[in-house]
Image (cartoon, rainbow, N blue to C red):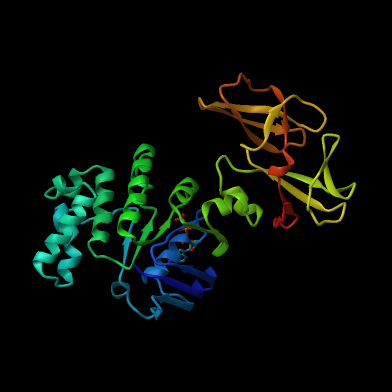
Length: 358
Ligand SMILES: Nc1ncnc2c1ncn2[C@@H]1O[C@H](COP(=O)(O)OP(=O)(O)OP(=O)(O)O)[C@@H](O)[C@H]1O
């Protein structure tokens, strides 16, 4: 179990900078997840920590040791790839043992570690099979086992579940969470799946265009996104955004929603400021079209059993999603009213930065 510090880490490929001044600390035993859209630099950051890429500038410290010039093999980390990267001609047992044999570890210690990892991952009966004789989930277990036997300071996992079907992903997600607890291991995990990030992480790092947008616990990011990008990225279905302009309301400012004034408490803005209101689909409520509610024309109705997800367009053409509890009778083309409870509204300025809420 190791602890990692990144200070002002940048990575450039030629003239293109793909990581910008990354500052981050990952504590002993922490499970940290990097999320962000495709191409934002998640894998590059992980590979730079692993030593598979060299940082262009900045410092990488593992347990207070500067490791910028230390090779990947000597950093004491283990990486698990999306592609599993198993040796096809070797048995599961040989795949698990291979890295240890290369380090000239005594045979009985290798056998002990292989057996222990195989037991932990429930792959003992598969030890004599070749990778092609395994299912996707079993292969991924072997890939994780190969990391476990090395007893690394940090596990680095690059989209390890993305080749699995939806059901197996959920099972493996739970197993990974249990494994993290059991090993008390430091883990850094890359995914573009925000549900995976929410369910696994102690802390999430949201990246965009090679920069950190926000770092926090899953609920920190969900409840208090620092900006519109994080607000839209964390939470499913994604947050709705509605453009508005502040108006003076007795003792403060507010907004006008469909002819009705709504106060925005604790908002320190001049009247006439352009803002964006954010509301999660599970916070907005479906009601009659009335003064103060936003009319929505439904374009898609998704019956999920316990809830109905309604997608539609406002009269201004903004796309809006709302969740109605239960199995309501809605049809496409129908017009409904949406109420925005003021206590659940997020407010962003014109630049997309979140404004403090009461
Ligand atoms: N070897 C390379 N040479 C040049 N550019 C690269 C190289 N590797 C990555 N990049 C660029 O760096 C940026 C970040 O890539 P990276 O693979 O880290 O993104 P990612 O967030 O992991 O994306 P994805 O989710 O699609 O895997 C991308 O714009 C990519 O094109």
